[in-house]
Length: 247
Image (cartoon, rainbow, N blue to C red; front, side, top):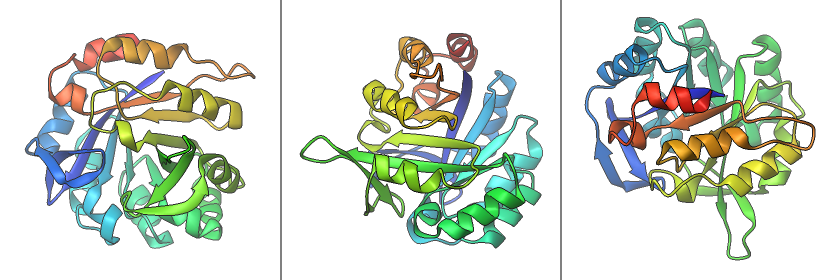
């Protein structure tokens, strides 16, 4: 299992939100400096999210993303505000290894299929979900501010019609909380699809990574990677320790 060290971008800076709430932000300084630190410590991937673009569209932090992609040697995946084919071209031709489509993947399946066909193995889809009052997982879009009107199961069915490289699955209610990952939700994902799954949100201890790594689907699938952000920047454990736990 791969470690994906996470850097969320807002206003050109590295930040973390609590449960996707733009009003509950903690700053962590220069994102390129943080990316180089994660690289030096041995992360497998860098996972970048443009929070401004995810909410409003556009490319608020794209120059920062491309700077990180061209000034580090580890593969970079990026999501947030990827709404057009031109966005995909600019990012992938600019040095990003994998683009994550979220809102656009659900609202424009033709765009998703076109991107996946043009860039085989380099298009991922971000599925971000909350549990409703009945305990069912519902997918959110536009920076987690709007519901997509789809259950997680329905969203998986829709996006997996395209030949995508990975599903990056985020439990919104765990994001930035350090309360542990949604293991049940991740187990459900392994039952729903054979597309590689990357887990995101909630990791607070090395044991969480071990638990994610131990999950196994009915056809022998395993989680491909785990995104870790707040636990790294707050020193809960080192990148090297996280990589070892992922192995």
